[in-house]
Image 1 (cartoon, rainbow, N blue to C red):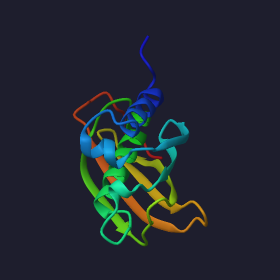
Image 2: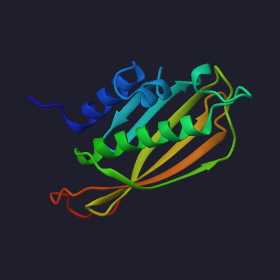
Image 3: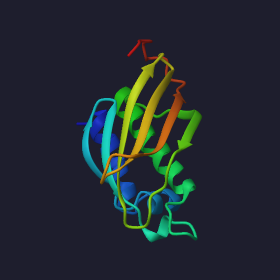
Length: 151
């Protein structure tokens, strides 16, 4: 019996956070904990490690972008049940996080036009809810089985 898309996307993120997969993603997502997940939605907690920090002890923006891309892709997969390719990723960096600081990452599908799906990813400081980064991602598929719908 095959897993449903939510279980598959959770397993993929958990594998990456445990060091399985591409080295860049495995390092970037190391320690990611899924708190809540359902169709089109993933909420995670994450502690910034020194392996993904810049020279000033801040979470490196490239690592933050990789995490936003991967968690957003997992939310889209949990919604549609198939792999899509990123066609647009826009991230606003509003603040930063320091080494060993805990953040909350929330990804939710906000639009579905059949072959193209959009997700909004918010990264917030766990201690006070301050918005650190906001990502909007569009992913496209060659799969023709999707039906266009509005969320």
